[in-house]
Amino acid sequence: MRDFVLFAHIILGLALIAFPIIILLYLKKQTNWIKPLSFATAAISWILLLPAGKLYITFYPATKTLIKAGSWSWAHSIIMETKEHWGLLLPIIATVAAGMVFTGKAEESKRWWILTIILSALLGIMGRIVKIGALQ
Image (tube, helix red, strand yellow):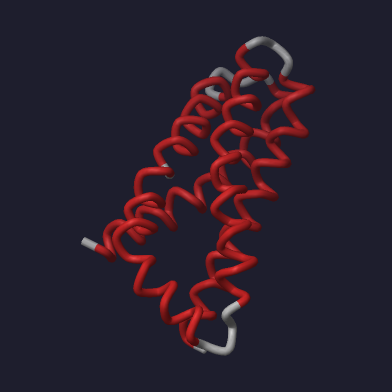
């Protein structure tokens, strides 16, 4: 169960990097599938909260103990706390970007898609740092 939830979390997170990149590449071409892909990206950002919450509630307490006892105790205090709060902003940002595409403000949505990509990548990096902190 843990592996399934973890892989779902990782795959959905990678989709939140890849899909906005695809959207940005085709935004000016006004293709028919930009709106559905924008909607799917926003939906994935909300769905991602499910495996993230399951991992955090069920499996993270043991990892947190390891991190706090290790030499990288800051990995929880700084990185994980930041990751938790920024992760809650991600669905809002992706939804705003998708909403702009749907309302005909595709050009203005570029900054929001870029923010989605950057935040998704940073959250992935922070997750890796936290994981490394459990191994130190």
